[in-house]
Image (cartoon, rainbow, N blue to C red; front, side):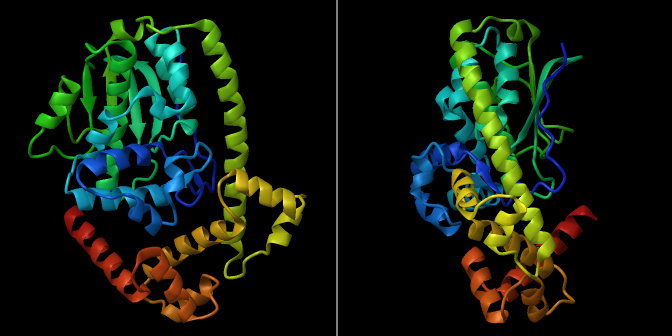
Length: 362
């Protein structure tokens, strides 16, 4: 039986900018952070979100927003393995409608492959793939960007595999134990928290973030299997996936159009014309994506500014001009809104970060 693979992003995809991710991880992060006395809503506000993302089934966040909140939460809690706590705190309903499909699937393997197939609807922030291999049935969690902040990368890998083990035990049996779990990041000083959760050998500095299911378990019938319910939920998921794919394609096309046009920004009227659409229709489609044209432009400009700040030969005036700002003052206001600091300081911190990474890799 062929494996189930993660969808391949199309050329030009900018998942860090587009708001396409259900904020499920952030909702559970808020619950866990509360145990540390950390109030998450101010962190959401800092990245342009508000508490509605915790209550709405339609609002979406971007990789950039989610990563920024995760990074600050790890810093403020001081918990280097916060991802494990967030993954272990979840329930099947944390994954939305795909969670109900997993419950009604015929076997555990069917449940895993359903989760991989509809991962774009579950709030996943990694790319899932699954296939039968020599050690057993292997589920991989690939990070969306190898240049992710290391603390965020560790969080996402931990949250991903911890949530799978937790949800498998909730749906199939508390006695579930993987054959093995592997992480790409280095071994922590105290690996006990990993062995306590996974109850199996855990390897670090591995080639992939992956979990190996015992063969007997993937063939095991799901306790809540129901073919009629499964078929009904699958029909709903297929409809949602088609709708979500259309929304992602719209955002990607707009982002590419804006990025290629900078320093000039196509007007909203011009974008509607390019899409053979009325302004009202395009505005409605963007609202369905949980965003606005102004927010998409802001995201593309932000990405461009952050790239240009890494080029030491460019002055702030050069950067302002190339990113489409009227002057340096407008650039400063935007950077302060994005990062809480001016462009000169951000450039200095980015340079120091690159130098330290270079020394670490030498």
